[in-house]
Picture 1: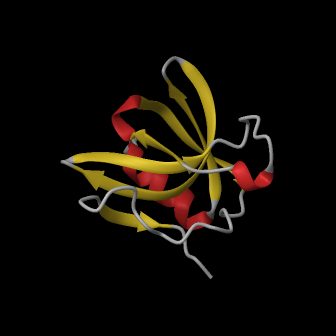
Picture 2 (picture 1 turned 45 degrees about the vertical axis):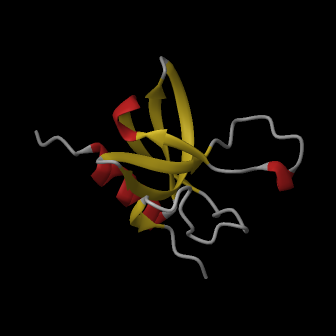
Picture 3 (picture 1 turned 135 degrees about the vertical axis):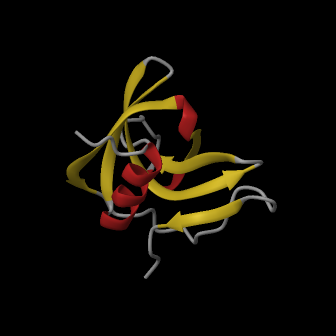
Length: 104
């Protein structure tokens, strides 16, 4: 049995525009990953939490999750549409982009 790295699962989900399910701070979360980036040697994923109660569609935004803090990551069959305002920009100037959802 081969173990898939968390980074590989996240990259696959970004490429296929599929949701991931993971444990974060002891709770199961469903995330729509938009980009994987490195900050000071640590990996982060920018993702939308579609289960979060947003007041409006315009309020929806990406959260940034440290990959080391996510466990039991699995790619689901459920697809997602990237946020319309996602342009691939990074949260901080020193962040290094590794992979991002295509912006058409």
